[in-house]
Length: 288
Ligand SMILES: Nc1nc2c(c(=O)[nH]1)N[C@@H](CN(C=O)c1ccc(C(=O)N[C@@H](CCC(=O)O)C(=O)O)cc1)CN2
Image (tube, rainbow, N blue to C red; front, top):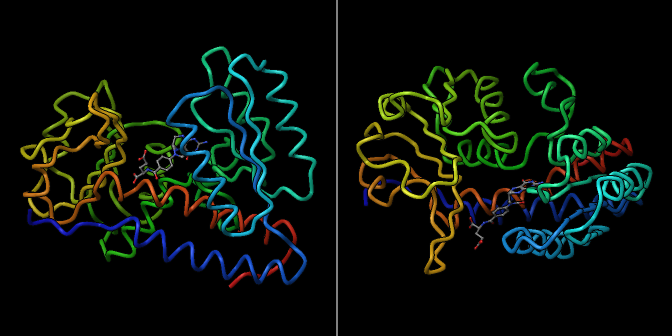
């Protein structure tokens, strides 16, 4: 392997240490960061992610609330719970774990979260502000924001560079396009209808892949020396976790995120970081 391994666990640890200091500073001013996580159903992967969020929030001594609703929960029950936390002054960030069961309307749920408490940055108002690149403060989706932190920590230049984003989800692809554009990169968004994907990915100085298909990106699809960010989270039949990028890509790339241990840990660290920011913004307090 020749590529530099981008160590998401190490960077997440640094972020968490800063978040702990900021939490202590806020708490000493009478504000305990409050995070409400709503999970509906019993998707096993979501259960792990939610438990990890609960643990991290507990370690940081947040006011952490996790509400687990049964698979049979109705749209009205979920919306009522979101509205309840919208009104609760002790809660600064609200997150509804995705995916929701198929009978629920995720769009409406996200739209019901008060934009200023939308710690996931998924509300159209926050996504719109991100695309408009307005000057004031608003939450940004945690995984793409975490990716930008990783690229910054590893001194990966973006201005004037070609970035190819494969996958156009609201959680990753769409906000990442806006973040990269705001960082002066030239961004192309590829998705399942894109023709000649390999020709496109080979032009990328920075290639980000968030599709959910193991080994989608092979070595011949990557420009030598490129930075490759693998957001894929695929559980194989033998239980191993693998990304969307084949292992052989590490022989071609200049830098690459591993799975596990790359982007994943940044999602939760960024969530905690952003909860503290929301608590400070909502209460008019300063964190350094
Ligand atoms: N409302 C949201 N739902 C979902 C989000 C999100 O940001 N907001 N993201 C993903 C899941 N996710 C957090 O919710 C998440 C995924 C992966 C990890 C992580 O740390 N992965 C580890 C491996 C963990 C394992 O062994 O399974 C790693 O990559 O090292 C954290 C959070 C979808 N839903």
